[in-house]
Length: 51
Length: 387
Ligand SMILES: [Zn+2]
View 1 (cartoon, each protein chain N blue to C red):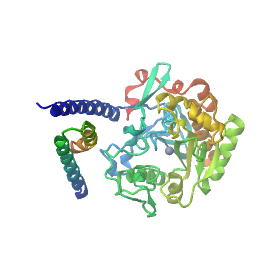
View 2: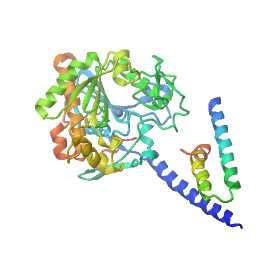
View 3: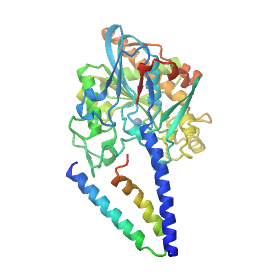
View 4: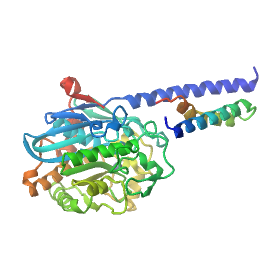
């Protein structure tokens, strides 16, 4: 795997981590919770390398 | 458990369910195999990776069918599904594949040129995943693909796509578009390998005619036409005049632009001795201002918004209540392809390409596309190729 791909995966994992953290921290706003989950979908699929 | 966490867990469950359900649908679509029935004209079948080793074992590899006549003559390459969301091309290629008998010369068919593109979709545009063509023995089901190869095969995209060898700057997306990556290179991006392999066939096999079959929006000026570089213009013009006079449908010639790189007709003309032609038939489904992108719209081309635009003369093709059905588009391609071969053969008797047993425009319009597809259940098993 070329170095650029490894960097992309690291960035993806980082954003996934941040989104999960935001989701856990969110206390009231259900719209925001849904938003975090929606954004998570493609990133999780990329991390899992689902084709 | 707090109320917030109850809501969160419910949301997580809903999202996992959506992810699994849609993931399974996309997986099934990506791995759905279409049956290619090799007809009486097929003499050998190869993989494209034979011409560029870098394609081996990837989803970009695809079948190359050779239909060699008893008598030697010229050679014609037909490429379909360069853009896998323009399915009239694939249907035309399969009609030739299943039915054509070659009396002289050779016909080479690549039905799914951008194989990767045909295994993706455009969910943001709400494309149907499949479409079905009714036949006498049931219906034949096809994958509806996307214009570009999927990022699953070729990723990441560059910020700007620098065309090889011209260094022209193109949209980042076009590095996955097999009508922008010509003439390609053996060590480039995957789609550059795909077009490079086709260039190798054209150069090594001394192919006379190279036909790239497409579809284009009714609101786009380059539609219902043959795009041809300078040296192909004469044959293209003769073909359009003959189909207009004998078969009554419009088709015009568009010059291949000099300064726009990566297009098949441009680069094949500049990097090989073949005569390239790019065939466009209208496809209302691809126009932006239409109703929902349904399978029905894809097949019958009927749309109320386009109809109203047509009355305001905003379209580049005639359009009325009858829409622009698939039979007409496939019929046009069948006739234009045969006419290009005819016109070439008339002037080059030694290199003639004589194709028999393929329907023309009126036949396809009358009988429908499915009429020319055979029942795989009654076909010799080792003559069925999955792609
Ligand atoms: Zn196209």
